[in-house]
Image (cartoon, rainbow, N blue to C red; front, top):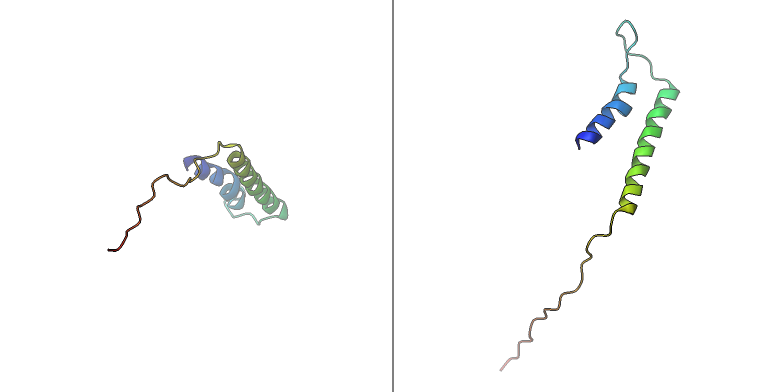
Length: 73
């Protein structure tokens, strides 16, 4: 999670919250917004590919235990 937080700071917050030399917030350009969108999409795609490459987990298989039937007398 720390890596995700750092990535978010670097690729999302920093471009959106940048200031000019006088410390005033810079107006967001379409280029900045496009860069942020692209970075997010790349991260999502990377995550998807990592999930596809991961070894499949153990799947739920039916157990061999079967309760005995209760017969009424």
